[in-house]
Picture 1: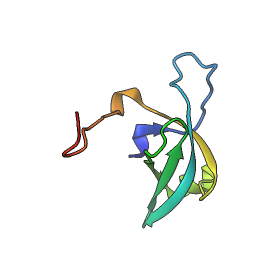
Picture 2: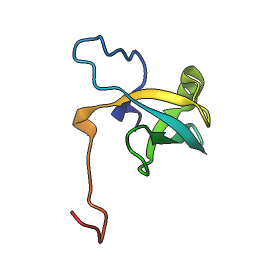
Picture 3: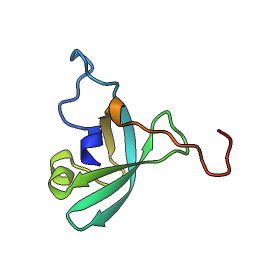
Amino acid sequence: LPEDRIIERLSPELPGQPDLCAGTVQRLEFLGGTCLAELDVEGLPGQPLLLQFSLNQMDEFGVQEGRRLEFALREDRLRAFAQPGGRS
């Protein structure tokens, strides 16, 4: 969800600022008034991440395939789940 990630006003110098992540947009899926961007995140090889953007945010942040984006994830929104049938 858009409220789960932070993309605007990122600065590692700000107190309390979450750790920054970066990734390259590999694929876009338009869903009416929103869009899902699949990112190949630096440091997470083989683990794509989907970020949701409004169409206005797509334009504002220049989200497009092949583009590198910096973002942060809100720590209180992170969840990890074991893969079904996998090791936990």
